[in-house]
Length: 75
Image (cartoon, rainbow, N blue to C red; front, side, top):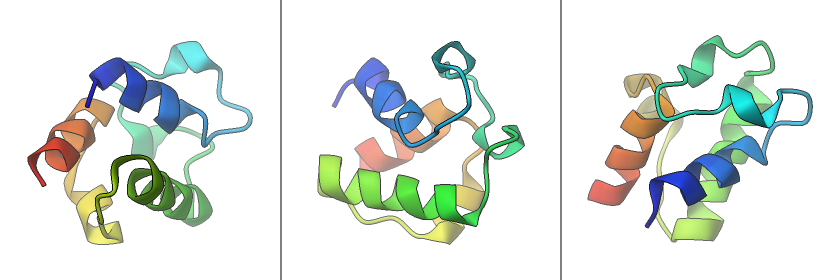
């Protein structure tokens, strides 16, 4: 599992946010486009792309994209 690939997959779930807004330190819950549907899309992306299951609580517990990456990698 590669951090940049994870960021690219994460960014692909957003329609209007520019790709350069997504870095390891991006606090994804502060993005204007972040909402419950986006959260569900991220959960589905992680399940489909990485065969890992996370919950909404896991998304809330992590702050940055890198935090979430590290959590998913630890599963």
